[in-house]
Length: 449
Image (cartoon, rainbow, N blue to C red; front, side, top):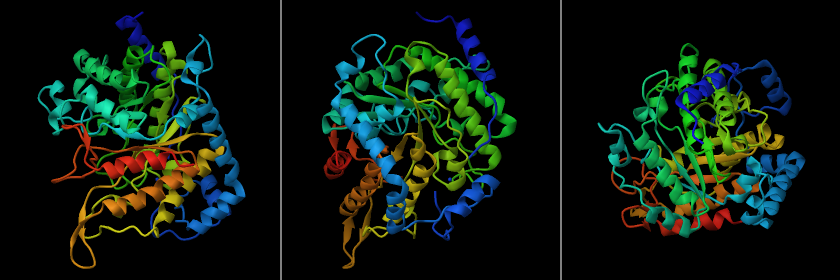
């Protein structure tokens, strides 16, 4: 039964009032010096802006031997248990146990982002946003091709700002919501896991500053109250991700974990999101929800100060384009080859996630990662593709993630050539793969034990 508009607004208001502000929470910098675990613990207590050291492979192997084996065993055991269950057994009887967030994560292999589509914005007509950034209209054939390749998880980034009405209702445009739901069903009806989020809202209204906190919270609550109602009957295969990279654009610490005050607001918004969904009825009481640190950044302060609700159906999201100079193409600083030396950067980031989340049985998902398609000159001066290097990086990257039960979702913005960030691996116009080798490697690496 659909709730009345009045009841919906009461639900949103109640959820907003129920949330109390909590203290707030960034990617290990390359010039970090060694610090002891005692110094780290002291920094946590004091709240100092202490940076985490970049660890070597040998360092992390020692740490893993000392206190990580139990964590790895725990997640491996969860994966084995989930694999032994059929989906029919999991959902057969009314009242059957719903998989926890860790168990849902264990059932995932690897994911693909439908990027630069529903998260696009700027069209004079909101319904034009889906194709406004150059990608074609999404079809079931596209999603089926992704599923057939072997991906069992689809993330659908959605920017809601241009489809939302005025305060205090913040009513989502019905046609836009219907279209998002249609694409959700393309994957959900085929048994895939589906994630929807609020994406480029920081370009509009989601600026996590204390002076804006109540207004921002009201809009976030209103959006998730409506989404929770619309998808209330969907089972655990549909996940909600409260925010994407919440941050103050253009600020000094935009990509460095933010300030104490900004991290506190992000914590408050995460809790408001969880409370709103949980109060919405249907399957939302046990739906897996994804919260994130400031900017989705993996830095010492953003991770250490992230407040995670005591809820077994909650997981934490990080974005790890690591190492940055390899995965992107910064002018004059691009690292084009991969010899494994910088694997330590991946390990140090994951060790931070392990210390603060995995070691406390809080599951982690990387909802965005990838490496751009680029060409460079080899030692002989020949222009060559970096695909072979990306495949070597991907094997190292996924080995680390698999070791700790972290599942990953490739960021695909549809761009394979031309200007801009070329993260595209799937040709949506032809339902084929720009880079079949990378698509194959993603599936193969995700299945490694």
